[in-house]
Every structure is written in C-alpha cells, then in structure tokens.
Amino acid sequence: MSSDSLVANKKLVADYIDAFYNKKDFDNAKLMLAEDFANHHHGVGVGRERTVETFKEMAATPFPDFSLTVLRAVAEDDLVWTHGVIRVAPGVPPVIVVDIWRVRDGLLVEHWDVGQAVPEGATLDELVQGVR
Image 1 (spheres, one colour):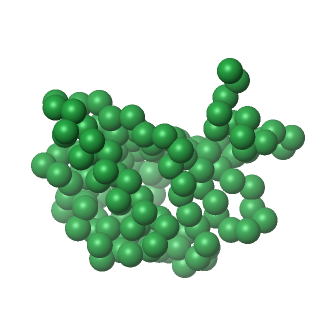
Image 2 (image 1 turned 45 degrees about the vertical axis):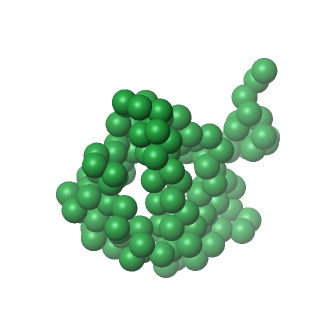
Image 3 (image 1 turned 90 degrees about the vertical axis):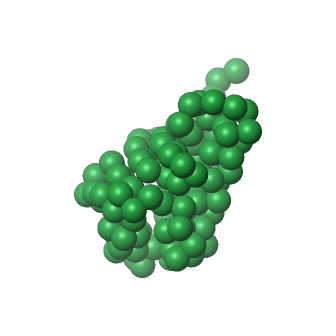
C-alpha cells in the first residue's frame, strides 16, 4: 500500500472520529461508513444506521459532552489504529481506548475497540505517555 493511501486512511479515521464522536454530525459521519459497516463493539452490530442509533442511545443522548481525543494513529495495510482518551462527562474519570479501523475503497468497513479506565491514583499523562 502506498504512503499516500496510508495517509488518506488516517485522515478518513480522524475525520470520522471528529464528525461522529465530537461534533455528533451523524449525517456526515454516515457518508464515511460502508453500508455493511461492522462494529464489533459489544451490542452494536452491523450497518451504518445501527452504529449511529446505538451510539445515540448509549452515549450521545445521555452524555452530550462525550468526546474522543486521538493521541496517536498508526496505519498499516488497510488498518488504522488510534490511541485516545474518551471523556464521557465532566467529573467522570476518562477512559483510555485503542480503536482499530479497517478501510476499503475509501470507506470504513470494520471497527474494534478496547478500553481501560484510568486507575485510581494514576494520572492521565502516565497512561498516555507511558514509562520512558
């Protein structure tokens, strides 16, 4: 895969995250998803409409301040990994997440994610920067 394609894939993921999680611009975000988009986050399922409706129900409506800040992204072949911080609401401890996105023909076609709550006594900086 060319370096231009890898850059384009990372930009697609960044644009999607901004539209979907941060701006809640679901109409624009849906344009970046394949019709058969498979979201492997527990309880979401397949399809761009299902992805949007589940997120609205589980996060956007009950937590209007929900946001995802990407700290770093890595692209390889048709995959993009992002390492970021989810903030659900003011006063709620952040969650560190790794999302994996698969791209096909300029659209997102698949998503996996894992998360870790910030442990009591740890700082967000310690978790996102690691031990050096």
